[in-house]
Image (cartoon, rainbow, N blue to C red; front, side, top):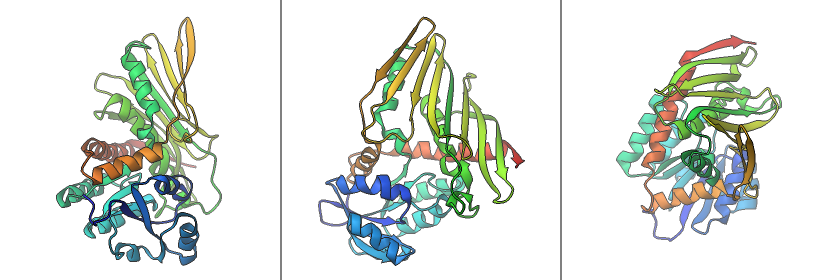
Length: 330
């Protein structure tokens, strides 16, 4: 239940990341069940710029946010290597937490914060937002309906062009490189379609010598039945975010799989030996759906145990991939 007596979830924003400005805060602002109560940044000027657009009280410093009276929840879009500390401190302050992916930078930390949230009866939800778009359920239904026969393989790619010098992803101790930031998307998609019992077969990472961070890589996972998942990520490519499922009689392909805008109508391509068709799916707002899930969980109307179990397995897989990877310095 909400911690305060009001009927709206009073949420504080911890960090002024680009994803918050472009996608999450507009969705929070539009949700009638949510009130943006305060926005905290290391810079008072940045906090004011955000509150001028989205409302709430501007605060300098993340500690100040946790001292706000009547705050029910915290949204954390900080760099991934900072998540464990501030998720823990938010939970200690009695706040429900919505946190950008990755939930933490390691499997042990993820297990610890999930267990602590459960112990305290608080909601802790990792924002792998693409999982909340209806297009993926449509793809899975097509697969279950036999559109391509028995599944034989999965492939996925999330790649972007190089970022400007100074981008946080180039900072080893804060951003942590490409794999920690967005390399997990194809891994989580593989888990969505193939289940959590995936084994790491191998991986190759390209590490930048100057910054000591992973810039790109490829990963091979497999189910116990031998169905492979071939995954690619990187920030030294053209832009791609896509996946494909190969079956005994055809393929299902989905482009813009992870970052579709809410107005975008996804196109599912079905290919068979003697037939190809494109099925236009409904537009959906994955960020709004995440927020609705979070607020429903806080109200006690939604069980997010499956999402948390997915986050736990995701953290384990990321760690297993890192250990298995052949790292090449470039």
